[in-house]
Image 1 (cartoon, rainbow, N blue to C red):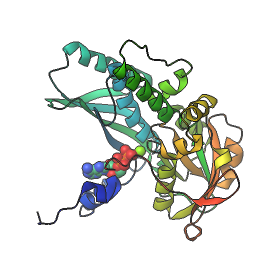
Image 2 (tube, rainbow, N blue to C red; image 1 turned 90 degrees about the vertical axis):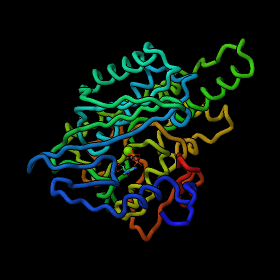
Image 3 (cartoon, rainbow, N blue to C red; image 1 turned 45 degrees about the vertical axis):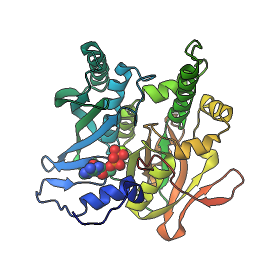
Image 4 (cartoon, protein in one colour; image 1 turned 180 degrees about the horizontal axis):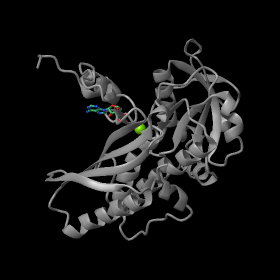
Length: 344
Ligand code: ADP
Ligand code: MG
């Protein structure tokens, strides 16, 4: 180790990953794609590949047990990993689960956590095949690895988007972030005065979006049925802006994204306005929606047109044209990511 000291915040999460992994090259012919996409891609035979993805949830960073029931936490830990396999156009089949727990948790609490993991395994039809258990001094940590499979020719990377491809999102966005704002507000009220009951009325949808996100396995199935193979894809774990920029960077394209096209549920918008926030800003910079963001060639537009699960929000352009967001007044502003960089 050198004498130099670089702060983690100077590099940011993605800069750090790049710095730590850039010296590694892939040695085995079966390792088709390593670091850099939603999942690694490993060759099985000439027709099929295996997909591997890992995500870790840390108490106090990713969840707060004051409002996150352990059962939901278990479910979410699986769902977010299944979502990464979906983002490669694959199907999750197995998971491993590793936990670090402090002795402040009784066995019953961990059983509760595992009941959520089991519910997700049943819902997504994946098998729990292993894991690791250890102790922690600071809080609960849960790390899930998902293993999936896909047809080799149908794997979708972040890097395949072409100029003039349409940019599509599934579902509606911003709900999970607004759900978190409501839960945080009620937590604060409760901490100041425990006799006041939390007021979550009218916020069921956004709270569910935060506490029980679903991976869009249904959309992967629809795309298969419609015979649409996206040209690029990513799941929306951070803000929409950051994910769009990931696709543009990996694909070497620019983009035009239209404010007025972004799908936002009415309850999300109302909550945002209640908090004096612009709903679209919440979508661009919020996170945890676990919807899919993908691009398709123009020729596939007819196949998804009118589909209630998919919304075209813009298109890709030449990289030299830049990455633009067209606001409600029709002005183009440069798209910037101010999402969840964990070191800032
Ligand atoms: P996602 O948001 O889809 O979960 P991340 O942003 O966490 O992906 O990671 C981006 C890429 O970097 C992925 O390919 C992931 O496997 C890889 N990666 C993240 N952290 C590390 C690490 N500490 N060592 C090696 N690879 C990593
Ligand atoms: Mg991802």
